[in-house]
Image (tube, rainbow, N blue to C red; front, side):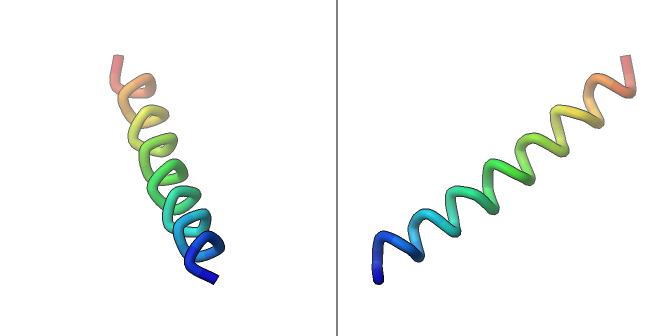
Length: 28
C-alpha cells in the first residue's frame, strides 16, 4: 500500500516537472 502511494506521488511530481519543462521550452 505504501509503495502504491509513493508511486502515485512520484508520478504526480514527474508530471508537474514535465509540464514546467514544457513551459520553459515554450518561453525560449
